[in-house]
Image 1 (spheres, one colour):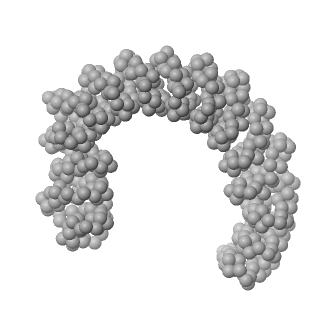
Image 2: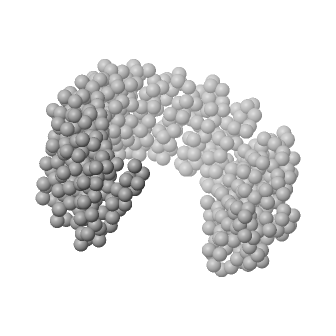
Length: 587
């Protein structure tokens, strides 16, 4: 929306723009409707601008979409809520166009306006609009009407309410599948506004029609209705009416409907309550986990931890765990990946013994999976298992596999391991880290992939923070500094990056004695990239070191670099010298 102080464009020009052949001009004009409205004043907006928009037969969807959006926030420009009804005609026209996104936006704007209208105006203006759309000859109008019933219904008198319920029932049996789909997807919203006694009769009969529809695209939207209606009904009604539908849907002949059930299962369990879940939904869920369509198994596998939380550990071990074992060797890598992303959460649900006996072998098989995403999903969730079985067992059983993954051919897997190392190190302790993981951390500094080298440098900084500067001085610094003699300049750059990250952790003394000489020596490197990275590192060290060191060592080196033949080296050396001057002035 335009702001108040925006210059008021000549109205005639803006209205001409609305008729211009250039779509961009028409779009700009629509986006400035609020400016036109403010210039015209409320009365002329109602009498001139809105009728003009109602007759505006633009055929470009982008312009119509912008108009539908603007009209939704137009109430202040037509004189407030008492005149809101004048905005309905142009939006009603937009509700009948062919383009779905324009209709959806028009419905959204109508709902926004309807929510602010007075009850009497809703009955006089909004309800007739809904009825006209519902009786529309072309299916687009009928589709749009389904999204408006929940706004029109609450303010209507009883007789009108009965009529609206009857019209909605007709929408649920419309000849056009698109209308039935719209009725199915909006049923939950409409049901939420309906009185309890009508909910059990009228709405449930509509729902039954939709669940038995011959089009799977309608039935799968009715699945969403199960969860919405389940929350509105009493528990006993829910078990009587909704539960049989869910069980039938889980065996539906269309895989898309079964997929929807698998996706919505947790919400459906909440609707029917824990007792019914244990008795009736466990067999349905087991069927979905063993479904012959991979997409259904993916959706079901992704919900395995959430579902187990509703059950007792005994039931989960008895019914769900056998399926999980089968899924861990599923032929589809995507099923295994979905399982790997949630299976770690089962450890707290099943408890220590069951995790050690039943889950650890599954974790190991997934950690050795040939598909990198599966391995990645397991690595990133190890923490949940550690909380249950303790670090000793975890390190004995899973660490060999982790070390193997640290050398994985997929760089993203190696990256995930690096990011997990500080957490693993802090849990395993210094001794264990030095034995098993220390060499790996150095090895990554010379990886072929830049992201790995960068992450490895950051990893060293985090380890130095966790284990302290003395430990880092013994175990990290000497090995890092050795690598500055690597013949390949990219690896030498990684060493410089590691130095700039380690310096703040190591403190001024160690930086001055051990790290700074290496950086200064690198300023004589033959590769310009190394030299300008030296300038960057020196700039970062200015804040760590004493002013005397900066003046005696850093500044002369930067002055020399600022006269380098390479333009980039001179630029970064100049930047670093400016930083030195600023630090000196502030101190």
